[in-house]
Structures are given as C-alpha cells and as structure tokens.
Length: 89
Image (tube, rainbow, N blue to C red):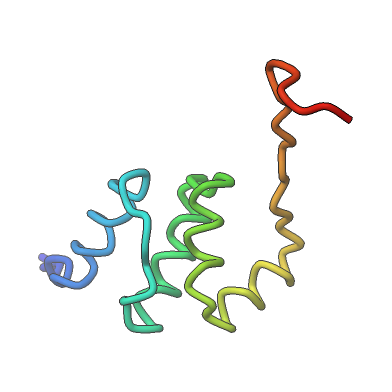
C-alpha cells in the first residue's frame, strides 16, 4: 500500500494564487522561484491572457521575460478608438 504525501503548503499557496490570478495586480513581491512556478502553472492551466501577461511582465523578472520571448508570446495591444470627436485636427 503506497502512501501519497500531501501537497506542500507552498504548492497549495501557488495553486490558490493561480485560482485567484484574475484578482491579482502585482506579483513583484514574490520570490523568483515562486514567480516562475506560478508563471509555468499559469501557462499549463491555459490562464495566460493579456491582463495576466502584463502583470507578469511588470515584475521585470528576466527569467519570466526570457520565457515569454522564447515562447514567442506577444502582447497584443488593442487600439481604443474615441467614441466621439472631442478634438479638432
């Protein structure tokens, strides 16, 4: 009979962060190894969207930025068009 070890508290915390990533606006305070693990889990879970990508990019972490470049992940900027003409040309 094999006994499975329960997940570590760190692993549970990263899972909770992944589940609540849509509510997180700053990850720069995280230690690098946790940030990288969270980024990889985000990719694996298919939760990387433009807003979350910006949060990871804003950390300035070189390893994260390198992974983004290596995977050719592009930040698509959608232009916002004015709804009315308020400026004269």
